[in-house]
Image (cartoon, rainbow, N blue to C red):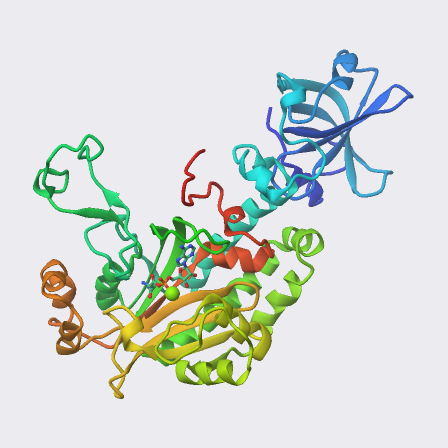
Length: 458
Ligand code: 4AD
Ligand code: MG
């Protein structure tokens, strides 16, 4: 028999009086004295569940009253308008089939009471059954769809860059090694004997590869997993996260900043339409600034200022920071957040950073000291976007590469020898967008199964 999703029913697409079948998991059972019970059934298709009325006409009514939270059921019955508050519809059950029982209700970790997010991380296989993580899963899907839609409508091509790579794009040395050699048992082997015959890693960024497609297809983007072995146990860093990286040819840093601003605005707008129900939940239960902050991105022009001016603003603020504010030092997350949350109160694009703190591929400015880099900072999260105009002139690029780098990245240098053009791009952390949209505190709760130092279970 074909079944109906709770979303279908709640969106009024099925007529009252029709026979429906709904499959899902029990969130609650309330047994009434008068020979009937209320079941709440969720299938994850939307935020709400559906209320099911079971009465003692059912042949297995006695068993139904003993069902516990978490078991899987298949309900058949008549759709009715609900008299109760909180829902438009309910199902008067004519049959309730228990598809998967809960062996030992005492041990089922997801009871109806509120759990801490720390606890739920220890039962990551079951947390999608909670309101928050169901909402997060739908939000993640809708945001990914909005990202692809944004680029598709603007004729960008999605390019799938490799996950296994030989190069460290960001030059920060935060690489996970990929090897079939047995290093634990200390066999003395060389990289020539390894699977790829050379040293290989999980990619920290698809940028270098996507640049090659940019110089052929003009407007491209990557959207995939990236890996960083940075040992920062923060609420903003994952060892495995998803990154969106557009790259545009015949474009400079201003074009890049325009693209980043437009991207964030349009994606927020689209997600607001697609995920309103879940966003309203986050606004009510998690952070009452969620909807305001999303409007803040959509409605405000982002402030653009040079790194040097950002340093001056921070110094003039007289605020005591943990890390010193000084020209030539990277901005720390406390500085970034202070700029966007306290000084400007809108998203900020910081541009033209000192050359010494930025990777080799960024384009050198005429002053000789800075590069055409940009970071977008947003309230509540801090850095959400990092990007730059790329160095398209071979002699300048070479000046920032070591000899081994030149050898290994010979193909990247080739792009500067054959039809090179000014081009630019950026990376957006997908989970950072989700933190912004949901108001959740910890990035470990913005990805289905987080990978962080000392934890890769599930
Ligand atoms: O600033 P990042 O390191 O830039 C790059 O990787 C460039 N190659 C991107 C490009 O120009 N194509 O990273 C980009 C973004 C950051 O702004 C942040 O949002 C996110 O990726 N990010 C992380 N998100 C979660 N966990 C981590 N460990 C992250 N590191 C960076
Ligand atoms: Mg960055």
